[in-house]
Image (tube, rainbow, N blue to C red; front, side, top):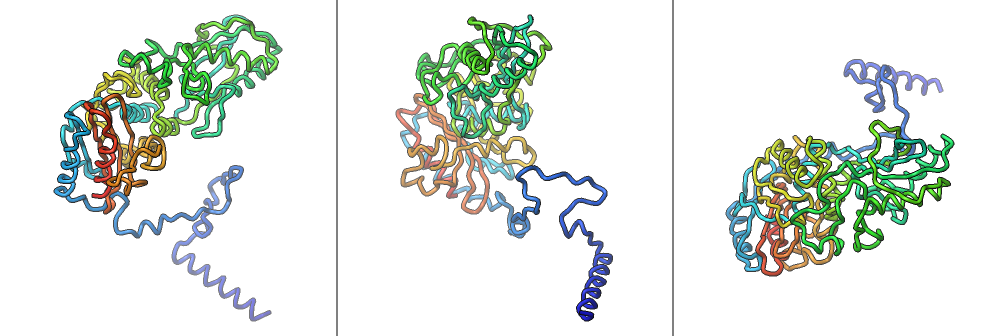
Length: 466
């Protein structure tokens, strides 16, 4: 026993001497806080032990991810030029391939020509939203006190993903719910002794026409998009399970549903529910918040959500001091993109890309995507993470893309946003080459005879293989 104690004492002395001579601290050994710093209590469900990551291992790699050697320009040019000769593309095509590390253009053909972008428009809209509003912004749907006692106003906050009473809220991102808002509002009213109210709704956050001039008449009946209002539930769908039909008056539809939800909570609501502007500075009776903007952007890009894209465009307009309309949103988005260094090649009529009047150049798209992977713009990372993955997710995971002999080998290696309108096929995204170089690209064709999607897949696969 004496021998053991002597050995332990010697080890203690040696450890103490080592700590003093090497300036080693106890906090460094334990990964804990300094004794002079307050220690925060761990959140519920958070492990108290430090999490070991693979950071030190990755730091030993000879090159950083995305910093591999550039692909051989001659080979890349030859292969892309050959694929671009396919008649399926039609006679007007634009291409831009950019190295994200240096910004060098690796391939260009009509790269500055402004073409019809279709849904790749969402890359520009979402980039502007993240840059202007910030990735953590949330949109609030509120209920406030009306102008008279017993009057209540439901105020639209421009969140088209607001879930109605029959929606399943088990997906990503987490949706704010109208039923939750009704429960919170009813609780506040009851605490004030109010059991009977009149209800109105306020949609004045957004202004201007509810439909873009460049939309085709069938878009709303076919379920492509709903009329754009600041108060909408279930992206304007009559039944959230089905793409169509869309309701002709989304605010009224949502307000009527809210009235029924309040009644279930024991609040008697007058039969007539009408539009009205909420009084300035009115007391808040309840609110629900959307998911953060970065999650909304990921959803918009992955699922090509037209309704969310149009809402984002209007929120950019509000932040940039423009009218929250199609025209104001288009100007605001272009202003933000100029601040990001994309000074030309962007002319919008809507935020979703449904409009045949939109024009974007391949260079503008490829540069916007390159910004999302830049360390200088961490707030734009959701553009990259929201891109559909070839063969797996979103509009590239439907079983129809990257299935050809010349593209299926790059399943899982290509991320890209698709765009499709009549006679328009576009694809813009990013890929890591076989040697580890991160590149972005945009392939656009707006005089397509029938369908050029397989050719666009082949072009993206060539970049990934390069």
